[in-house]
Length: 203
Image 1 (cartoon, helix red, strand yellow):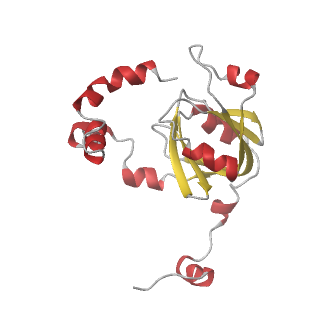
Image 2 (cartoon, rainbow, N blue to C red; image 1 turned 30 degrees about the vertical axis):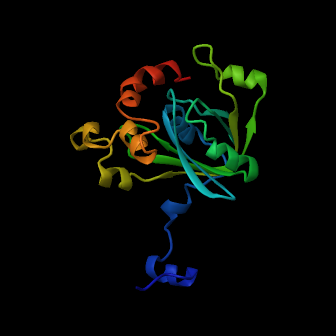
């Protein structure tokens, strides 16, 4: 099977990007780019560390990533599975990327930079929802920001409700946990109680 093993071979296959692909990349947040950040309720958070790479979904109220200034973003770390994979990576390797998605919009926004974790009490309190503050805030120093064209969203029909899959056709979290743990955890009880458990621990 032929493989591409060098940059020269890659360039022979793909050529070089046009100006529309390069002029959009900046090292600061423009008003246009801020509009995407302020509207987005969902971010894919990419990090890397000694154990490898990690990409974690982060969802919150629209605009949950705060534009502190044109070169700094802040994202609260809300409650989740407590694995802290992304946070462990950031502590040891600051290189971090955000991919912003907006339901209904084709364009996405990509931000690459270097992050650290803050536990400043005033900062945590400023991100509180229903009186519940995050345990840390991811502070990202922007190195590069640019929008991604809509081709991937168009091809996938991601926002087309006619293409949405019935969740009942997929294995549930309880089923997967039970299968992977020889029924030590998970099961029907886990699925039955999940909505109430999630509601009580959302923030």
